[in-house]
Amino acid sequence: MSENVAVSPVRVAVIQFDPQVGTDNCLSNLDMSLELAAQAADNGANLIVLPELANTGYLFANRQDAFNHAESIPDGPSVQAWTRFAQEYEVYLVAGLVEHDDMQLFDTAVLLGPDGYIGKYRKAHLWNQEKLWFTPGDIGFPVFETPIGRIGLLICWDIWFPEVPRLLTQQGADIICSLNNWVWTPPPLFDASGKCMATYLTMTAAHVNNVFIAAANRIGQEQDARYLGCSLIAGTNGWPIGEVAPADKQAILYADIDLSTARSAPIWNNLNDLFRDRRVDVYDEMLGYGHHFRFPR
Image (cartoon, rainbow, N blue to C red; front, side, top):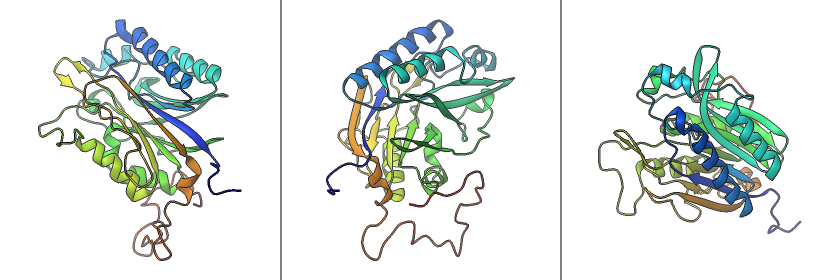
């Protein structure tokens, strides 16, 4: 086979838009997510990433308010609608929502595909007032095998913890889908190129793990909270593939990639291989993580 023939060709799309909090907005948020996902699919995308809490908005008034926005997985109305979309368009769709499991609430990402519901990830690292509404994720950091490649998920604040992308890649993830509500924090927020700190954290995580990262953020404002935009798709070398989205405009970004290249990307030259060079003789290969076995790369 020619080296130029893609083994796992994928057109990734990340969707940046403005879902607003409020139960009265949930249906319009969902409709907008589906409308934009359909646009991405019509443009050839077969892996589509929506932001964190894409159907609900973010800034809940209290825990009861968060509970009012929640649904079960996989039989909740939004998950069912997203699942039908993935099946109809024969794509893989990643989306964020509030999950209720009995009396617990989780900030959750779901992965859906042509054959239906695949799996979920519950946000492990909770930001600010999220700690008042949500339970920290309790299912570890799963990596999902699909026909297009191995897909890992993380949510927003997780990218500030280097263990998360490292554990996902140690389990063989070819691409990490990063669902975000990156919020404004004390300045400086952007550098001269318009990138925010989360942009660089995403690029760095992609670079040091030699993994693709598709990061979908939101835009807009809710009460006193504003959002940073700056969605991107980072290559295995860390650099953005194409543009980084603006801070304040709805956008869909695309990247045509071969996911299989992530499996050989760690081999930089004859003497340097990122995973081989790790000093597992002086630290735990999986950093104490025992939920899942390690895939060979």
